[in-house]
Image (cartoon, rainbow, N blue to C red; front, side, top):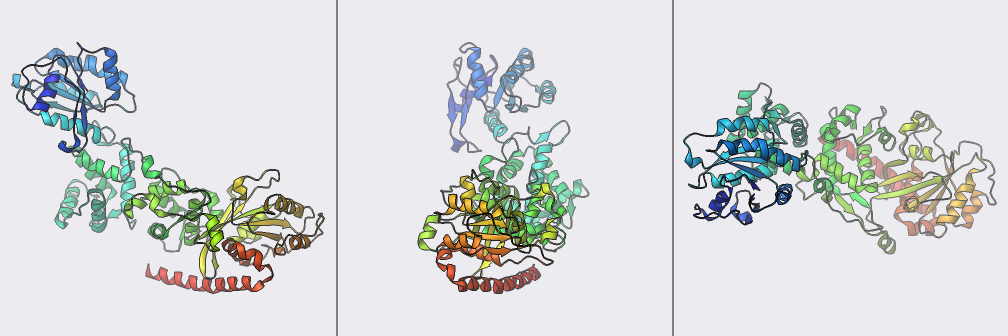
Length: 611
């Protein structure tokens, strides 16, 4: 949009289009669009003229609200037109635009061919007074001076605005820009040593600008930083301070596009927020399909773990966790995570627990997983289209049942039972915690999920346990959607089994989901249940496995066999029913598991030695 009166705005537009000064100038130029391929920035530019004589105020306001950039044209030889910039045009535009998303303004001094001197001295104070003024340019429609530059600056003001990046009064980067560049630095610092070495700088350069830096250019960059600050270069690599200094320098030298290219490559929008497209790429999940991380995603997450496990103890201390999540705008893991996955003796999340938590998030809430991978820069470091490349959507469960085999590696087991029957204990025992250790868990840090790995026929699988709150009158679709069901009762409480029997008869008697009855607290005295059938008779009548005794009241870690069984039933639901009488089925599965667990641990130790 061009504003101003009798200052030559229409002549400017016509000179640009025809590359010669027009003999006759209409009151207002027609709207024109300059195609993308003739502009340096490769974006189509739509130019709209305004004429007070021809147009109403209403039309002007409408055009202002649609504009991405506004050029206020004054005549360098007319003091009144210069005064009008501040007395009339800027207040009028500010009234019509939203405070938070101000439109960049460009001051254009036309008719520079008529005067010897420059109007810049008068204009500079105005520029300092109004932050929205992006730049000022003097030109002449008559002798075509600076005409194409003017339109280039207009494009640049939209595509690479200074406003969000830099504060000219303070001569420093704005805090939101520092925050974004700090995250970019941390993501690019692949070994997390606080400096970008030559490899990391080259990777960064290639990621953002598609070309590596020549060794000499790398040295030149570091020398510029060295000359200007003491702690910008360390161990021949660039520190965060040096990195921020370089961007300040680019902006001060008018090379905003360099900083904007970096910011946009790392997912930022014009307000320096990560874009929705970057954080939440499109991913289709048909019904009855589940979401898992693929091999590349696990490799990436492993590298993130390695980068932050500073003391190499295969667990993340609270400080290391905090450091890992510095690239997030908030802390994504609460204290409940430590009670959802395996931890070490200090209660710190182990390597396996860390991967388990990622697996859980991806299974339960894939959008959140995509967002988290976005903060960590997965698609940038692994050079993928988007984070969606990290996700495997499994095939429909119906097909798995028909083909009697599954490619899935995460299986969900819902745990149902009356209050106090021992469900939480069953979850925690899966993470290797006996009753004594469980008693230390704070009520407000409790988790209704537990996830860890099990081995079935030598294959590593994830079993996800979910404790469903007991409400017999209403179990939602989500409470019933799972691969295997555990009905837990307390053998010491005569009223406990009735809940399991009712739930089974109402919801699972005709379902294809395998069910297992767990006789919990089996270290206590078994009492007769107040129900028409004993648990054993009930299981026999409904062709279920006999109740499985279970306790976590012991000095060592609880036995894990039952969890292998549950995973096996989840993987082979058709065999779970047929093989009721065949105990060798269970035996084969769990023997394979023990052998593999030992082997797996040895392999992991070997891997650690290499790291």
